Image 1: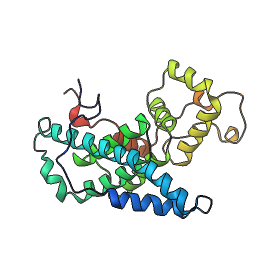
Image 2: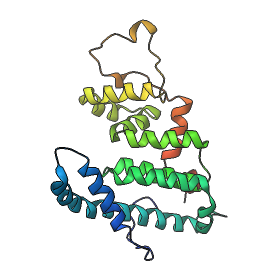
Image 3: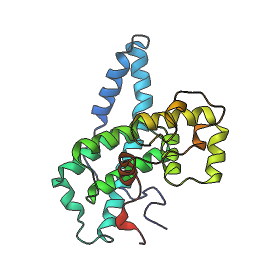
Image 4: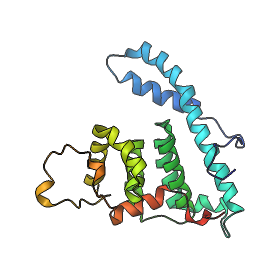
Length: 225
């Protein structure tokens, strides 16, 4: 079974708990919503603390296991050195905040791959790294699926995307507005409505889009291993 095929089952060494801090943050946030009120916020906060903690712990365990496994697969890579890697630490904090907010497989995989790539030195400049992680946070799984499709178009996926045109057209426009894909249509046709789904067109990745995919796909050091 490959490195990226399953979630971690290995627990981490025990650490000081942050339950009190998490609970206070959640309850404080909920209490600030006028409709909820203090009592309801208290009850709802208690309901949310456990699943949020579960997501966070599963994320940490999965990342830690995979980083440990990389030590035996990539020459010169040491788990212990990451504590001194400020770029990795910043990425881990940002990606963790996003990971706790989602349950979707595609987004968790993109965040995980970004963290691993940054740990291995496959990272853009700091500002671009933060921008890319923010994009993963704001994107839906459809955005990520479409970006991979535009990189390698095929008739099967095109038919699937065409069947849900209105969702995929909006995601295509989003990718274009973020500068990740290029619009090759004639200028006169760009602002006209079409009866055909946008995914039927040619949307090559921009240089920025290629860099983004390089960050959120499997690290190249693992190719063929």
